Picture 1 (tube, rainbow, N blue to C red):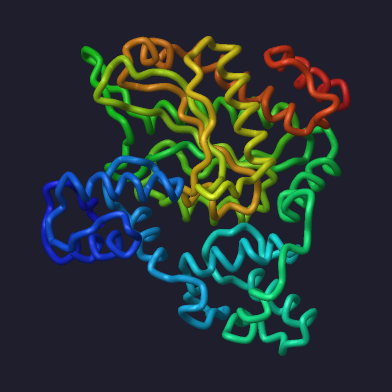
Picture 2 (cartoon, one colour):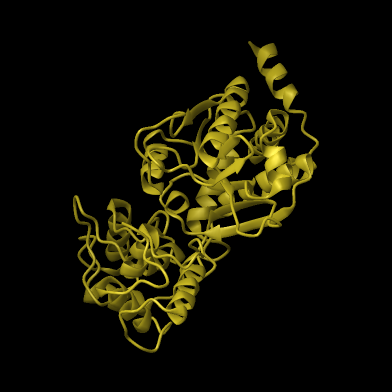
Length: 382
């Protein structure tokens, strides 16, 4: 769908406004996308961990539509092929996780894993274990408090899986996602004299370089797209591909852009919600990637942030998105178009991936890993 934005009017705007009114982000109904509505959309995006741009595109609309539902307003059940989606599902999933039942990531989708968690809960409280959440199940949920302390079980399981995987990169599967690409989806575009630099082309070059370096270190590497795809891929499509490959990690590469040329720097994003729910392993990966890039390249540190973008929310493995500088910044652009600088970024990400598999107590200082040694060690074993 075309993004709905400030200045638009009509039935679609009226529907969005009615949802925002119901969320207490607006006070008046109307069919005009005015400044007040722009602020409300941005507040909603900020609260939901979405990109804050004031535009209602596919992902923001999906979050708005899902936000209509409150737990208890309808019976929840596993529906195939069209699963139930909504804020009520996310609330239920978080409740299951707090009580120690493995509902998977709180992705707002009532899938088979969520249904199994509900059925397990029902068995424990003496209800028919049909995996659906109706009045009786809700009543039992409201009677009970948290069952698990010391951390959310899902993230403890994720951390334990990483601990047991060992420190060796050999045989582990990683998906590298070069952002954008396909059709007219070029991402940020900047003409620079006779040249035309696009986000899609530069991040694919970075992904291809990273693919070679990670493969040389013994990892199984998959890219989500080639250099010139004919069709764009959504975040959900890219997450589904990574899930189907059984990946251990996913790293998505992007560049940023801004009207202000002074905006520059690198930022990393991991899965997390406005309510504080966050993937601890994904957050650690984001931290490592961010710190390695900043130390090795000297780029401005724009820190890490929690988001609920589809690519981060729907993946079953720790996933990060890295915005590797602003293509609209003359300083960042001069560096990013230099192949040697892109090699520095690749080495930084490779070092971060290796550090992910070190136990926390055996971690090393940022910038200290000689990534050439990773290839040499592999060659010696061969």
